[in-house]
Amino acid sequence: MACMRFQHFGLLGILWLPVFCIVGGLEMYTVDKVLATCGDNVTLPCNITTEVALDIKEFKWMEKNDICHWGVEKNLTSMQCANVTSQNSYDFPLTIFNIQPEHKGTYHCKLRSKEGTKNGQTIVRVQKCVGDALVNVSSAEGTCLFEGVYPKPTVVLWKQGHDESVQHWSKTDVKENADGFFTAVSTIKLRNGRHGG
Ligand SMILES: *[C@@H]1O[C@H](CO)[C@@H](O)[C@H](O)[C@H]1NC(C)=O
Ligand SMILES: *[C@@H]1O[C@H](CO)[C@@H](O)[C@H](O)[C@H]1NC(C)=O
Ligand SMILES: *[C@@H]1O[C@H](CO)[C@@H](O)[C@H](O)[C@H]1NC(C)=O
Ligand SMILES: *[C@@H]1O[C@H](CO)[C@@H](O)[C@H](O)[C@H]1NC(C)=O
Ligand SMILES: *[C@@H]1O[C@H](CO)[C@@H](O)[C@H](O)[C@H]1NC(C)=O
Image 1 (cartoon, rainbow, N blue to C red):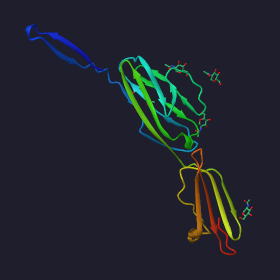
Image 2: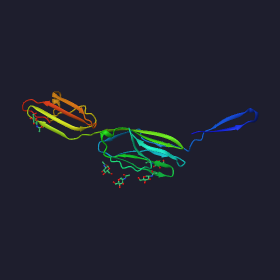
Image 3: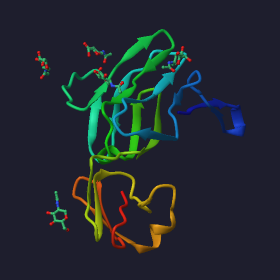
Image 4: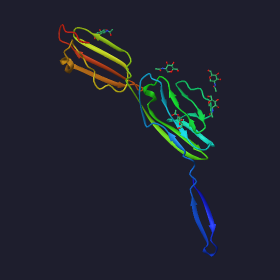
């Protein structure tokens, strides 16, 4: 925000002197990236520090859509926005409960106030989501089904005792489900009488 001031210098005409009214150190603190583990509660900070009280026009968290607005109570099921004001700060953390792959994305914290505008963003990634595994091993073939896996699995390891050489007889199919999780089905051909799992 800048102010302009002009002064008259007699016959010299008008001389413009720009005076920048920098509002006392308006800063926003967010973190760039968060790598969260499935099931955790994750808090994304958004903290405004300022030397003057802010006349807030809009202060919100959004991803694709608005999540919450400062000063507006909203019942969210899987998230919560808190607001804490102290003399020099406006603290507006967003907590995501029981984080799941569907929560991955870019979260924006946006402030619009009479004293200035600030935008911050946090990229959220989710890791280590593994649902249930179903194992079915017969004498000729073994099947292992993993549901609710995230991120996308790259390899399913088959072991037979301490011997990992059975790996090259296996085949793994990976499907992405609508909820962002993956289903992996790995099958392995077994020689007579040998068992893997
Ligand atoms: C997440 O928060 C909820 C509600 O506060 C709590 O019940 C749960 O134990 C927390 N989970 C973890 C993993 O901290
Ligand atoms: C927000 O900033 C204020 C001022 O720097 C600081 O006292 C406070 O601890 C910060 N809050 C968080 C959650 O980082
Ligand atoms: C902060 O949140 C509380 C309860 O959620 C609400 O009553 C209050 O109005 C909020 N204050 C601001 C400044 O948003
Ligand atoms: C939010 O939920 C609480 C408890 O479930 C309820 O008492 C309150 O009226 C709800 N507030 C809004 C704005 O829906
Ligand atoms: C295990 O696999 C065999 C042969 O592929 C099949 O006949 C059987 O129904 C499977 N059992 C289970 C519990 O899926």
